[in-house]
Image 1 (cartoon, rainbow, N blue to C red):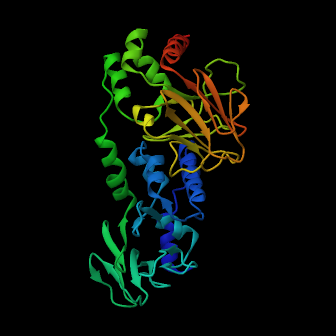
Image 2 (cartoon, rainbow, N blue to C red):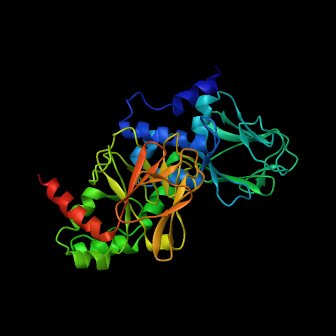
Image 3 (cartoon, one colour):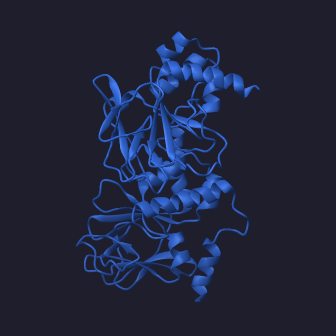
Length: 377
């Protein structure tokens, strides 16, 4: 192994400290996003899915899990994609080739890019980009790099490969500050004190999954009439164990700001969450499936299809549709051929393992009262 690669390996490999269970779960979840996107063990990541997974995590947690640096890439696509250069370098101990050829480590699929366009490598202990004689050139901060020469990379360096393909180089810390910390700072925190203000906040703001313990405590003391007036939305809850008709919730759900992941066979998290079917889902479907990039509820089970089912609001009623999934969808034990109306407390089963429950506001209020009392026992 060359001296540069040894230095790179020592810089990028995680410390010898044993990772926490949360850090291991984040790494596994990121690997599943790569797999769903058709990428390898260190392949490109859909930007939206990656941010959804890590949006709620602290800077310390993120920097412990990811050493970076990152490339945020655009290629005329609607959604950017992400390259973790550190992960690549730990797998491939040689320069990382970017180009049009499918054998390149990083592939841009258009004619602006040469078959082998440029490379990323460590030069004198720093990341650098080298032009490989590309016909349309490699540019760093609008300055063309001479053929066969390299230029060092610093935070926020903007790269162009031809005219329409660009990438921004960011350290893990810079990436966190730009895409995660700044986004989190924009979110308005839930009001403290008045439970009615707290209810109204959750009713009016799409904040993703909600912690059940916190919600039950904060809403204590609200009357049924006040609850229904302030919170007129049904919710989706994850059931655990056999379907006894009770609201026995799972003890593991991993949540983000705009999506939540269901892990149906491992009870690793102690807090339960639920999802609010906000007003926006009266206009567009609430999607369920394995694909992390375009579902609202992502189920990490092999028998759940990438686009498994969706919940729609039609003719003043909620209904669930099966999207020709391979393992099928059931409602209250009955296989779903196309669609079925969702009545209060309807149980939805995706495949064999994932069980959800649709609950209207009145039933949800009664459940919260019982749940809150049980918390003090």
